[in-house]
Image 1 (cartoon, rainbow, N blue to C red):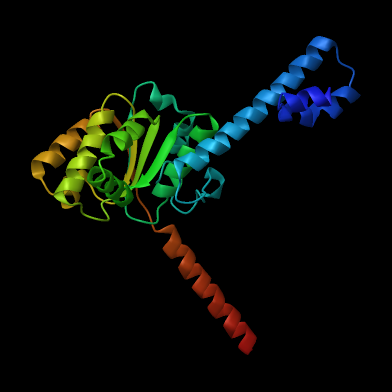
Image 2 (cartoon, rainbow, N blue to C red):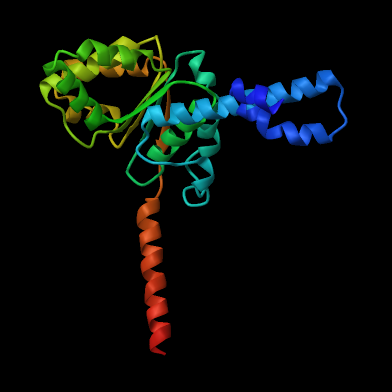
Length: 249
């Protein structure tokens, strides 16, 4: 049996084989349990591959969020996006708020959960995406990149608003939004309210058209509160001061 499972590369079934053989099961139940273990393992490995392909900037999970730090942020509602239910309505997602409140953390957590459920996700910072678009255009590879961006089940664009774009970069990013309009959702984090997006895209007309398409079917979450990173840094500094005073005593 083990030789057969190895030849078929059924490593999930192989892992549970010995335990199943110890139990008293009829042939049908035994075969079903083997296959279920194999399915679980293949889904697990597929999720790992998709997480790697998404190229998240770092690893983050929901369990790492301290809900008590910023109770105004509806993390319980945001976490529901991990189900992928919004795919049915092709609804965009937008997280708006100042830095340090968990916008990127939430986007990555959602993206990783979706990957585990075998959805294709792509993650970029806005600056990195625009740079890739400009480079692809200069190398005559833009159509290939645009097709890749269009095919992803979810395109995540993080940190929109930190760096202004060139006219070419703004136009190319606008084309990305247009290509996915009513086709597949985009999830964005930004530190700018919509009326300030001209600071990034420059052209008032282009910015208005982009916002019109993006918000036409969009779930918007406001992130309000105190920076978690700043709070943790202050707490760490205070702790070190107390430890230092204790050592002096």
